Structure formats: C-alpha cells, structure tokens
Amino acid sequence: MYLQLERGVSPETSRSYQSDLKQFMAHIRHTLTAKNGLQPSAIDSLHIRSFLKSLSDQGLKKPSLARKLACLKSFFRFLVEDGRVPRNPASTVRSPRQGTRLPTVLTKDEANTLLDASTSQQWNELRNRAILETLYASGARVSELVGLNSGDVDLETRSIRLRGKGKKERMVPIGTVAADAILEYQRHPPHKNKMIKTGASA
Image 1 (cartoon, rainbow, N blue to C red):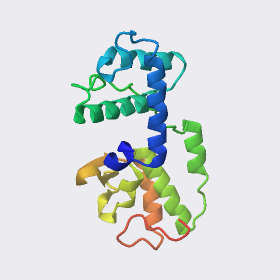
Image 2: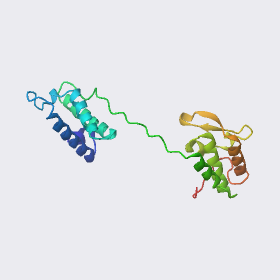
Image 3: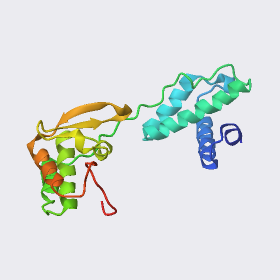
Image 4: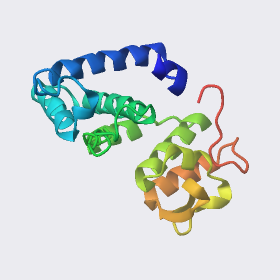
C-alpha cells in the first residue's frame, strides 16, 4: 500500500516488490540469530549481500537482482522515514553491473549484397542507394542523414557535414563510391534543397 500511495508505482510493481520482500524475509529467517529474531533493525548490508549472492548462485540474472535490491532500498528507506530503523542497510549495496550488449552489425559481404540490390534508375532507388552508400561510408546515424541538406554535401572533397547530438557539427569523408551515388541521385528529381527526400513508400 505504501508503494502505491507514496511512490505511485503500478499494482503490478507493488505485487513484485511484495514477492521480493517475502523472499528476502524467508532468507533472513535462516541467517538471523534467535536473539534478534526478525527485527528490521538487526538487518545489515551483509545480510542483503548474502541474499543477492544466494539468488545469483541459483542463476538469477542481473536485471532481476537489481530489481530486488531496488525493492529492499525502497523498503528500508520507508522504515527510516517512519522511524523504525536508524539507517538504510541497503544504501551501501551496489546494484549488479549489467553488461552492455553490443549492437548486431552486418558482415562485409552482407553489406555489399545490400548495396548491390539497388540497381534501378528510378529516383527512389537512386535515393536508397545514396542513403545506404553514405551510411556505410560515413558511419552516420540515420537521424543525422535525414537532416542532411544539399549544401552539406561537398562532392569535390567527398565529404559531408553532419549535425549530431547537441547540434554539434562535424565534417566526415565519404569516399568516391558514396559521392558518385549522391551525384547520380542529384541528377534525378525530386530532391531540391533537402538531400534526403522521402515519401509515403520510403
């Protein structure tokens, strides 16, 4: 009830936290001495680390461990605010570090197959090839490429001006193949000032 009223969490999250607390208390029953019983004030950071380690040994993934720790931090924060315990024993326990998953990328052969697929001379196919060649050559984000104007393309030096996050600008080389693809696209309407012209079928 505290979670729903004070923190505004969803009923589903509240149920998950209740389940996590029951699991934690079941673990504590086997670690606290009979003298201290199950008094919250007797729980320290070692008990919490022991609880998380036991779950990790059982194969629980890091995101689930992080959620359970967040539950305990919230619970003991409430007890501190309510004057039931002097400190939050979970506050010094670090959340399990979650590895960053690397993005999936095309192999060189897959990229070449994709680039070679655009052979038509229709303007939308020429546009698609110009987009793919420029993305491949420059490493630009799609959002950066969409904002590209004709004035941002210098075919003489084979480079483009990109506007990244925070409106930071940078000049990026694109090479001969991408420059030729852009030039071929520019020879066919419609694109006017906007370098990347899209339609309903884009």
